[in-house]
Length: 143
Image (cartoon, rainbow, N blue to C red; front, side, top):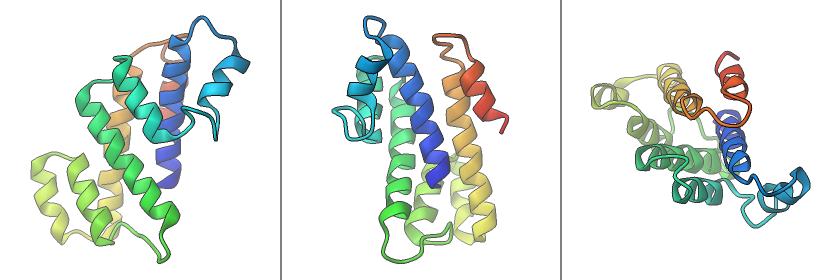
């Protein structure tokens, strides 16, 4: 969950950075780096929506992934794909047919559905193009 969320954040940062054409890399890092004004995943998601880099549906999907990543990173107890809050979050990432079935799935099947949701979001990013083409995001898709 944490790694996939971070890869989505990196891809989003790539597209935001590509739109900041009047800045050099150091200036972009001032805004987008860790601990910087727009350095948090949640802020990047909101900025990307405001800049019309992503649509509302992608915004909502990214917010789910961000929440899952934060839950797993900051929990005092072990968080797995069988944890109720994660199971419910994954059900929001998939279509209704799969969402209903998640209640009876084991953690491994839920993990696979999460990964499918992740790939779906990365595919949305790949359709954006961006500076230098689709290569960076497509490279993440094929990992």
